[in-house]
Image (cartoon, rainbow, N blue to C red; front, side, top):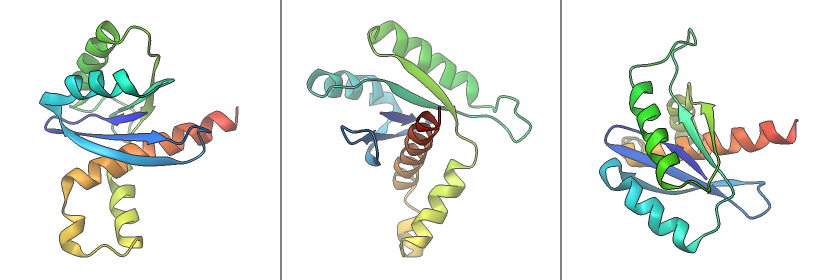
Length: 135
């Protein structure tokens, strides 16, 4: 599972059982995220969670990094048996928009921020899985 954590909305993606292809699962209001995850983990096996970590082009933390770090701390306290990895999420929103354009979505559909967050989570997860295959 991958999480693109945001202040208002959080995109979530999962992989197939063979961990070859990532697919968007949903976008959840961030205020409801922990409850959603508890419910999901109650009926779906999750080997690990990859959380996008926002960094600037220079490599320094972005302004949202502190919120993500606080979320990671809450996650670790609540879901102690699920390992966490972080992944650089630079440019995932840009790539998500490019994916939407390449997929032929009209301008109005591309303005759907929830869809952008879900696609961003999918990109984070796919990139993570590909990097693991190279190891």
